[in-house]
Every structure is written in C-alpha cells, then in structure tokens.
Figure 1 (cartoon, one colour):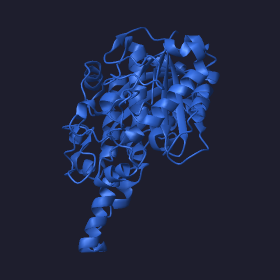
Figure 2: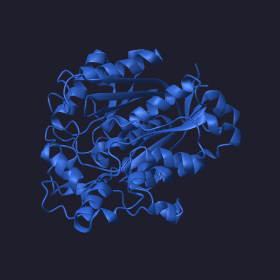
Figure 3: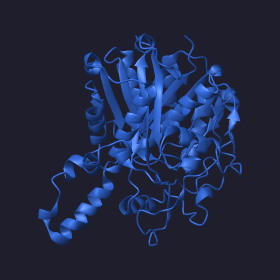
Length: 412
C-alpha cells in the first residue's frame, strides 16, 4: 500500500477567489453570506446566500471555452490550474495515464436547466443550445479538469449530495493507496444558488430565514440555529503517493491516513437521531488509520446549522470518543462560508489540510447560546493556535450518505 500525501490545495469560495484569501478571511472571522444578487429573492422565505463574488473565469480559462462551461465547471477548472501552479507541477506525458481526477458535484447546472426550460416554453425547442446537455451534467467539471490539465487516469464524479466533495477525496486517496494512480486532483465543486434550489430547500424548511442578519444566520451547534445557508464554490487537493512527491521534491502539507464511508439506511433527508450512520463513517476512517482515539485532536465538522444534523454529529462524536470527545477542537466552516453542498467536503478538506500545515484552527462563528444537545468544544468565535496531529473532516448528505477523511501531520 502506498502512503498518500497532500502537496497542494486550491479554492474558490464566498470568502475569496483563491485559497490564500479564503483562508485569511476565514481566520479573520469574516462572513461570505449576504443578500442574494443572482436573482430577486423577495418572493422567497430566504433572501440570503453565500455567493462567490467578483469571480472572473477568464483569468484562468480562454473566453470562448469559459462560455461553454457552467459556473461549477469554471470554478473547478480555475481551481485545478491554481492547484498545479501552486504545486509547481505540469503533468508529464509519461505520467498522464497515472494521474486522474475525482471531483464531486451535487446538482450540476441547475441554473441553466431552469433558464433553458423557460426559454423553451417561451420560444420553442429550437432555441435550446447544442451545448446545453454537455454543460449541465455533473461530471463535466471532472471532464473539463481532465481536458485542461491532461490528466488521463481515473476521471470520476461522485454525486452524493453534500458528501460529494469528501467522497471525491475518499476515492482519490483510495486510488493512490491501492496503486491505481500516482497523483490525483480531487475535491468538489458546486454552483446552484438558483430560484428552484432556494425554493426547493425552503419547501423542506432546511434554510435559515434570518434575512435581516445574514452574517449571523449560519449558527452551527448554537441553540438558536434555524437552518443552513446555501453557498457555492470549489475546493481541490493534489494528492500524490509519498514516493512520487519525494521524487519530484514536492512540498508536503500533510498526509491522509484513513477514509470512511457509510449509509444511514434510514431516511431520504434526515439522519437517525443516534447519529449511527455518521458514527460508522468516522469509525471506518479511524480503523483504517490505526490511530489511537486519544490522538485525534481536531474535527472539521459537517456542522450545517440545522437542528437535527448538529445534534446527531455531536452524538456520533461522543459515541466514538467517549470522554475524549470534550478534548477535541471542533470547527464548522459553514458558519462563515455557508453550505457549499457538493463543494463543501472539498473546501473543508482544504481547510483541514491548512489547519495541520499552519497550526491554527478556524473558529466557529455565531456560537453564542449553548445547546444541551451540542456540548463539545466548537472553537467558538475565533481561530485557535494549536498544533494539530490528526484532523478528521466530515460530510453527510441527503439519502444518508456519509464520508470522512482523516489527515495527519506529515512526519517523514
């Protein structure tokens, strides 16, 4: 089995159009949540979202090609180019077959589906673009990243709702560990802040309606949380076998030592109250690593800011770690980023890797009112300087699909 290391990260988020500005603003406690600008939200119960701001795809993609991509694909291709530039690596011809891309996407081009459907009803089917289907399908982000980078190894798109990005990392890690690939671009991308998405999540009563306080609306683990904030963005990691990374002299940020996945086998949109499915995924990642439970010192939580999810994740952590659970520093990036759906796991994995590499844990914003059902250390309201040895990154999606990845501080 190969050891797998992280050698580069990249992100486009509501807090910045590259990883360094996103990370800086996250640690500064800034919020990416504001009133929706992409359409008039007045008729909806929720008026706020975490949109990417002032993003120019033409900084990374030729203009004609960018026009033939949905935003989630533009984010992914842009991130992939930043990722390889940061890694100071161009995929050599002889390594294209062993370098791949696993990029999770939850919904794909929903905004274009809505707009094209309206155009068809108004003007007829002859007005549908020949590029409509090839641009909206969820796997196009992975496909376009492959085209842009020359990666010809495994090219896969996990579509597992809010766990898609984490399952992207999970699959890429597995491919390298098992020797199917030597390097993988992985993570998640999403851009579905559209009328149908906001209306659909409103119908489920899943979104916060704290419209007058956008920066305070996402409140993971807080007693007054009232739902999540829909967001968009992309987070990618470059994974390499340790041997490959060392041969080319790569900068190693951290190592991945375990990954787990599970199903709730319970409900289409709610976890079981004992958090058992979440627990199984975390246990699988820990079991694979062989780590002692007392050595785990940080969890980048799924932390959606919904009543049930936050309670269940807390229970699952306590079931696994027992008394040690209270010693683990937990953070929820969604308090400032919103919930990036299929991109969430990718971006949160990026921040877990940054946490280990830089020795600072982002805070959980808006944690003001303790909830008896959420009684752990959530790194409230500010970053914490701490050397982290092991960081578990969690994602849990509709359909009861769960994913976890365990990062470790690299020691050669």
